[in-house]
Length: 362
Image (cartoon, rainbow, N blue to C red):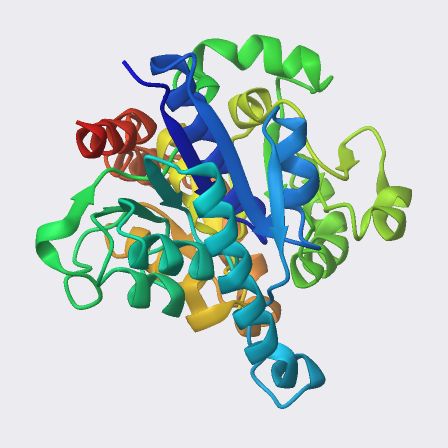
C-alpha cells in the first residue's frame, strides 16, 4: 500500500487546534507510516502548539476580517492572495491524499485550493452555528463532520455526518478519579468545589465576576479552582489561598473535572463537548465577543435540552448571585442537569471522523 499523506489545518484558538491534533493522532494510530503536515496562520498559537504535539507546521500570512474599517482589513485581499498562492505551492509539493480543515483563518485558503486541485477535503465544524469560511467551503467539500443537529440551512444535507467534536479520551471515565482528584488539588472532601474555566487565554468578564463573588463563595463554604488564563494570572494570583486556587492553566483536566461539583464555563465548542461527556452541572457564561455569537448559540442548544444553565454577560451583576446560590442548594436540579447533559455526549467523535476520512482514501 502506498504511503498516505494528510494535511490538517485549524487554528487561532485551542478549540480549532485540539480537534485537528486529535484527528491526526487517530489517523497515525491507524496508518503508522503516514506523513502529516499542518498548515496554520503565521502568528497564531498553532505555530507553537502543533510542534509541541510532534507535528510539522507551515504558516500562511492570513488573518480574519475585522468588523470595522482597519488597516488590517485593507491588507486582507493581499493576505488572501498570498495565502492562496502559498497553499497551492504546499499542496503541489506535499501531494496529500486528503485535506482536513477544523476551522480558523488558515483553513479557508488551504481547503479552497485543495478543492480546486480536486483533492478530497473534509470539514470538521465544531459549532452549532457555522462560520462564514466553512459555509463557503462546504459547497465543494466531500464530507462535513458536525457536532450539532439541524445544520441543513448551512450545509448540504447529503454531505453531513453527525460525529460530535473530538475530546480528550481521558475524560471518558472521571467518576472513578474523584479521590485522586481531591488529593491532587489538595481539596477538603467535605466542601463543595466550584470549577471556573475561562478558556486558554482567559475571560476578563468572568474573572471580574469571580473576584467580586469570592466573599460569597467563602460564606457558602465553597472551595474554588479558578483557571483565570495566562493573560490575567498576574492580576489575580494574589487571591490564591487555602480555599481558592488561582491557576493560569490546568494540566490535568480529567482530575479537575472529577473534583468539580459545579462548573462555570465559557461556551466554546470544545468546552461544551467536553462538559457533555463529563456530565457535571454547568452554568455557561458565553463570550459575546466571538464571530456570529457562536458561544451563545452553543450554550443555548444545551439549555434548550435542559442540560445546563446560562447567564449572559450583560445580566451577571443582576442574576449571578441568586442563580448560583439556588443551584448550589438544589441537589435535585444538579442531578437533573447532569443526567440531561450526559445524554448529549458524543464520545466516539474522533474515531467516527477518521472513519469518514478513511472512506475517501478507498
